[in-house]
Image (cartoon, rainbow, N blue to C red; front, side, top):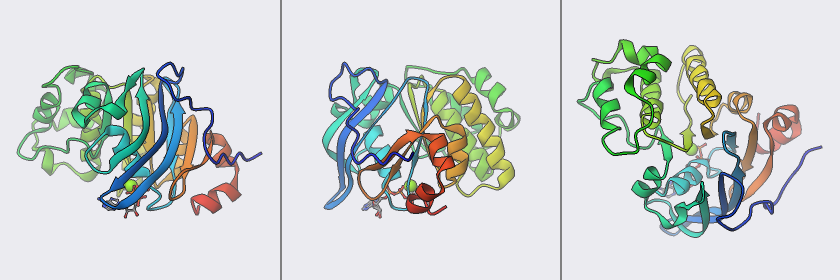
Length: 251
Ligand SMILES: Nc1ncnc2c1ncn2[C@@H]1O[C@H](COP(=O)(O)OP(=O)(O)OP(=O)(O)O)[C@@H](O)[C@H]1O
Ligand SMILES: [Mg+2]
């Protein structure tokens, strides 16, 4: 049975919410443009959630709202991460509270090597993975540690962006289109990395045009459709339901 859930009543509106992450009725604007229109969902600790929807559905804007970047501006709603109210924070405070947005957040720094980029992301506490641990998980980055980061291939730059998020002590990883523009072989490599992120129990939201790849990794999925959440359920339900995919994802 498909579950079309118009709003998400299971999300509670208080800091005592047992969910590790929850957002409740968030609304955000780019200037006059009203884009995120009452989005609510939750994630349990260690879960991977696929955030899906057609082009322009508001996926990136939702991630940016959660990361508390200046635009879009969140005008209403609550966002809680491990009992901390992200909705009251600026982006640097949300980052300090454990939100890691990749690859958009803190883009690769031109002129610095791979290693310098990694070290730089650890300048401010709390520090996450050590550089050695990152290299164990990203052997390609280890091989290229002395290389200027801007000369990395697109796929390697995506890896570096994810690695830079992990170099901080994150509680919630926001992955925006980690496979975008990458050849299938590189997608496969990044999939392996995301897989190991999942094994490590890092709570993650993955936004991906390649919905099937995201759904294979995810425990749960939500679908946005120009506004509120139109589906909230298990990732497998979306994989199994061709009508749902056709209706909201056009795949
Ligand atoms: N800075 C901005 N100013 C005004 N409108 C914006 C801005 N950024 C995004 N939008 C609009 O907000 C809507 C949602 O955009 P968003 O990037 O969140 O969609 P998306 O679901 O991530 O799409 P895609 O799959 O194409 O990445 C779109 O109509 C877009 O044109
Ligand atoms: Mg987007």
